[in-house]
Length: 265
Figure (spheres, rainbow, N blue to C red):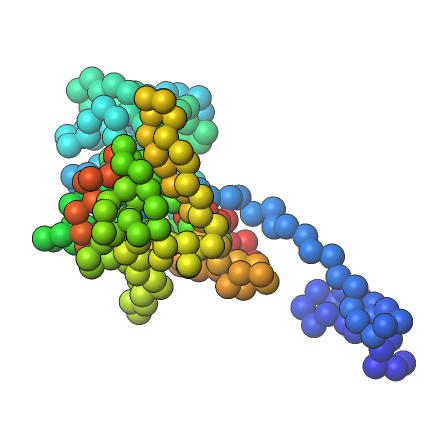
């Protein structure tokens, strides 16, 4: 059999046929792993636990303590293995019972971790830097692959490439994205909308609608042969951080999300 006959894949044993031109015919197939859409968040107060088991389609949960949580907070529940997580927005609080805008899609058990979060990065980090993160719990039994970072800013001021959102002059210290996994590694620092556009390429401005706000959206893709060609894998205990080092309170709203999937390989 010639070299340009059949090559056996060393892992699966699948036959890969080489065509007459001497190249391998392949078909790209998307993964069927569960997707993840995770906001960069900062925890409010201390984590708590589920006090009464939930059922699928419940829209409220009894906590060991709801201290520190407020209506409008982003809220999450996480099971022990880390392969199921719930997120919703608090619509009401009565003692330790929290009512949410999104039904539960999993039966969480007594003792599962719960917490309230802030997901609006429009905060003041000029004196003490503030860190918002996406992380995998140290006790989890799963990892996730981050394939892209999505961001959206809203402001009542117009936006252009010399500003950060609508902040005139941009930032002084900058917004830093970094990975922490035992080794701390900075990925980028942006101070203006132009910096975001250079790194992300996918950046768009939204003109102010009557009575509305100006907006800007961006997408920083890591996976794919036309992008970085690599994912950011977060194993248990790892996190992806955004460090706010300037005063961003001039923005009306700033949210960033990491998208990817659970690792099944």
